[in-house]
Amino acid sequence: MHVLTFAELFASWHIGLSVAAAAAIFTLTFVGNKAAAFIPVLKEAQQLNKTAFAEKMAKPAYAANQAWNRKWSGLFILVVFGVFVPFSITLEPQPWWRVPVDCFVILMVYDFVYYLTHRFTFHDTEWYEGPLKWMHAIHHRQHNPVKWDGSYIHPLEVAIGLGLYAMTIFVLARFMGPFHFVTIVVTFIAFGAINNQNHARWTVDRFPFRSWAYASRMHHFHHVRFTGGNYATITLLYDWLFGTLDNGEGDPRLKRHKGAKASGVASEA
Ligand SMILES: [Zn+2]
Ligand SMILES: [Zn+2]
Image (cartoon, rainbow, N blue to C red; front, side, top):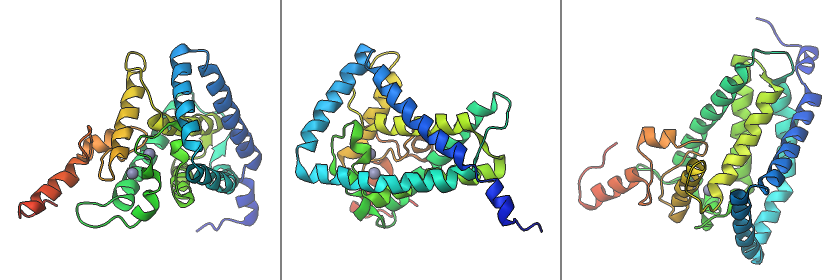
């Protein structure tokens, strides 16, 4: 068995590339948000969310949570781009199709891992109480979230969410080989943008914004009650697959279980 030497390990630690990716992610996200303001519909949504966010920030407890998170996020970003990404990124040329395929694989595998974590540790299940619901309850204090409520959250939950994402990239890179710089940048931007979009308030429900409106509506259903479904964050595929799609009435599996208990019928497994 080949034992990895320190020199070999160091050679696969592409810290410069990782820092460049972080810079590209922050710059492109910033520029993207500025550019969105030139599209009237997006500008309107930005304004709506900004006003609602300002109202929330006027409350000291809310502002304290956002500040609490900002303080910790620097450390998490340092770990993600200093440890996980440098071992998983490359500039070696790859066939063009690998970029969309890898982006899809990373986001779908992460979504599955997140779905399981969210459903089986952050919330009560049909069988037991959610062991981390005390932590996740902070995020659920927002019954009608706005764009930046993705970061109204316990710092430990940020560590778990970001950690799962970084681990997904790290572990997949061990099997699939390092991901191209472009793949890393695109998936990180998509990860952040989708999380923000899920929490954003959105009034326009017409082409080409239908899927955004749907994602936002479905995640808002999740926030209405602590027993809501829609646990996945990137797409709702796993909720559809496992019967936890919530169209406004709560997690159907939990509801069925409670109904069965109340009527004395043995609950389904
Ligand atoms: Zn939740
Ligand atoms: Zn949320």
